[in-house]
View 1 (cartoon, rainbow, N blue to C red):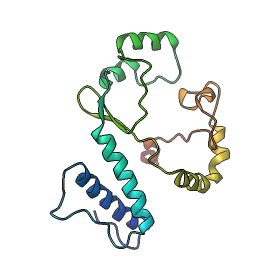
View 2: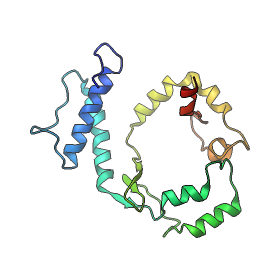
View 3: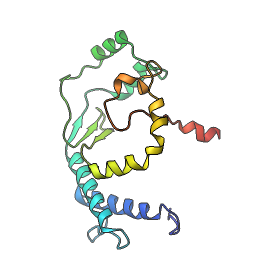
View 4: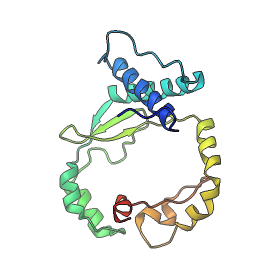
Length: 183
């Protein structure tokens, strides 16, 4: 779908298309006979940021690791209505779904896959510069009081206070795709 040029998302669409082509080229799947070049309308600073993200994603893609847990089986075992911690259940799940090295941390750019090869997550530490993160946080300052009110002592593991590290922004925004459908 072509985004009309007068829409605010038009530039984002152009940058996203460039990033996809650049990523595919970087991992060795060229999408066209010529190298992926940025559109001349993209600001140079945005090209540099896009290239940094693409480079990080390509490095993660080349560093694939299979997670030793069958996610579908884990989801069935957990059930859909789990909202808090249950130490007995957590211990039983850890025994059922063994992890080879419990202390092993993923600290480098990595693509985590399940046993069937399905992408579970992209681990991209440092992909967004501190400057970019500060700009994003600065643009969201008006939400800070609402976000911090989401932290509770017992509501859900998603908003449990002891799970939030010290940070400039502390809290969570809970969204449900069904809200839009209900509207």
